[in-house]
Structures are given as structure tokens and as C-alpha cells.
Image 1 (cartoon, rainbow, N blue to C red):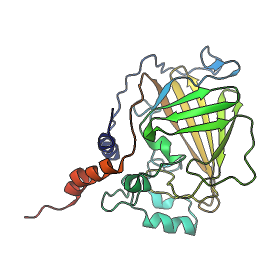
Image 2: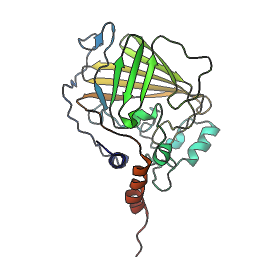
Image 3: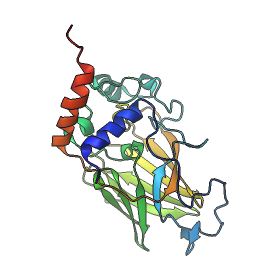
Image 4: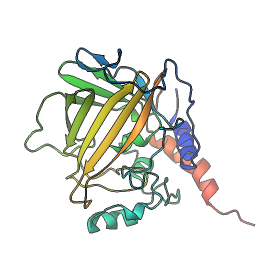
Length: 272
């Protein structure tokens, strides 16, 4: 069972641009395929069964740091189409990842407080996801922080949804794609690892499509008129994996241990 300390070591390595997961997956087919290929559809809907891990290895396996496809690595995160409100919040962000990364007094809500990463930031982490598809609800289980979502199919949002960490999600199938529409977020999470904020008006659309037996594509579109002057989107790929899922809980005691034993020792100049 993996501890939070081990997780933080992995994230530190990722921040330096080093891939941490093995590229070998059992039963993964790297060739492209049409949606009608056997095994991609089941009962007239996309078959999303399996454990899926982010692809950091192949030609499509690009590690992205933002959901803005015009700057996927967040080389210039300050150039995101932010409103003055969002720009002010971003200026105060001290992220442990990206072009402005720092572990010195970071105010990343996940790193500092063990807050949930929220949607869509949770997809930025290098851990598994899996789907449980039923006729009325699709459940998404996340290895990172052991959280899950229930996505009712062909349903409507409530007129006045409560503000929550993961938002209010409804889904539908469009051909070979599962489309998830989510509103009702609080504004306590970041969009990504670079510290971009969002407001409680954020509207996220996720599109999951199994492009081949061993490949899953996720496209995320973000519309947040309080925080951004335009809608933007990006895609990332997942590989079919053997797994299994491990324990990746956020424990403040382990976070503190990591801070004291790793971060403080590497950030504090030595005394000569």
C-alpha cells in the first residue's frame, strides 16, 4: 500500500519532467481503430471497461500542465485568457508545479491542506481511473485520493445546485463518446498544476472516447465567464493498464513529514 510520502516523491519527480510509470501495459493495442471495432462498443454504447492510466510515453502521450491547448505545458501560464479577478488570484498562487513552481511556502490547496483536487485537475495526476457503467448511472473511480463520482445518464441539473468540490454532473452517450456536463462547483480548487483558478460559475464538459482497444481519449472543455474571457479545451490520452489501483490517500501527517524531510532540506540554503 502506497503512503502519501511515496506519492509526494512521485509528484516531485513529475515536476522535474521525469516519467514515473512503466510504459508496459498488458493487452494494449497502440494501433488506431474505428469506433465500430469489436470490443469498443457494448450494447450500443461505448465500452469504457478497464483500468486506465495516463499515457506519458507514446507520440500521443503528452503530459499537459494546463487545459489551454495553446500553451499545454504552461510555459507562459500568465498568458492564459484570465479576467482581472482570475489574474489577481493567479498572481498570488504559489504552485509546486509548472513554470512558476516553488515548494517554498506553497499555497496549493492540495499540497498544503489535503483539499480534494476537484474536476478537472484530478486528471493531471499520474494515477488510474476506471468506469462502472450501468443503464442509469456511470460511476468514475479515481485512484488518486480514492474519490468517486456518480454521473446520472440522460438527466438534468437541478435548478440551483449546491456548490461542491466535484460539482453536479450529468451524462449522455453521443455515438462512441461519453459526454459529462458538470456545473455547481465551489471555487476552492485549481484548474491545473500551474495554479490557474476558477470561479463557482465554471462549466466543464468531459468527453471520453475509446479510440482503440487499449487507448482512451479525454477531452476537457472549460467555460468560466467570471474567470476567463473565452472557452478553452485540451485533450489527453490514457492506456489500458493491468493495475491494480493502490492506496493514494492524502494524509496531512505524511504531507508534513514530506515537507520537513524533503522540501525544507532542499529549499533551505546550507550554512557555510
